[in-house]
Amino acid sequence: MAWQLAEAKNKLSEVFTKTIEEGPQFVTRRNEEIVLISKDEYQRLTGERPGFLDALLSGPNFDDLRIERVALEVRDVDL
Image (cartoon, one colour):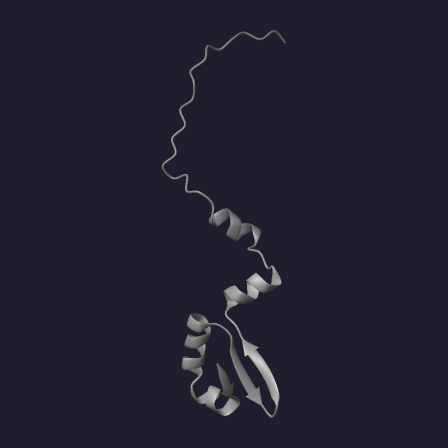
């Protein structure tokens, strides 16, 4: 949707919601136009990837993982 700057300022919450729900919003001021996009869309377009910590935190949850050690006999070692 296209907005004039004054209208976009007065209805910022609506512009924000429409950006998230409907996609890019165009805002014009004196024949100059900008496009508002969501952060997800920006990251998709720029190829921005999550950081290392985000990647680790989004991995599988090992809280319930139980690993049992195999009981082996201890052997003598000559030094």
